[in-house]
Amino acid sequence: MSTKNTPPPSQEKVLPSDEQVEEELCLLDLEDADSLLLHVQDLVSQHLDEFPEDQIDDDAARYAAQMTKASITDGTRDGQ
Image 1 (cartoon, rainbow, N blue to C red):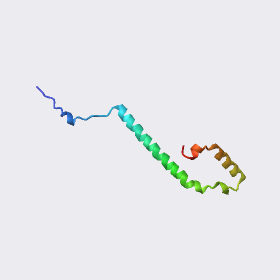
Image 2: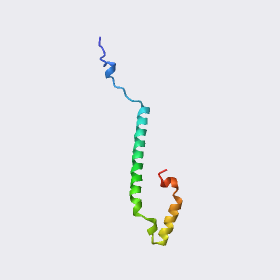
Image 3: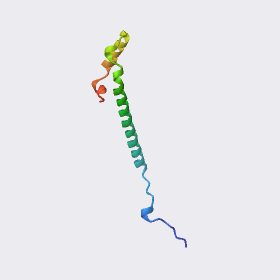
């Protein structure tokens, strides 16, 4: 007669469910997205001073800047 050697319950491996794994992956993706957004916002803030609107000499560039400024809402400019 053979006996089956099973580990005590405290030593059994408990694997997470597929749903738990997907949820954790989703949370990690959201953290990455938040981190990237912060870096982009920092980069934009740091370099906006390099493009002063009042020093545009070219008429076409001035017109393009006005169009761009008109299409950017306050929410976008302030980081929503």
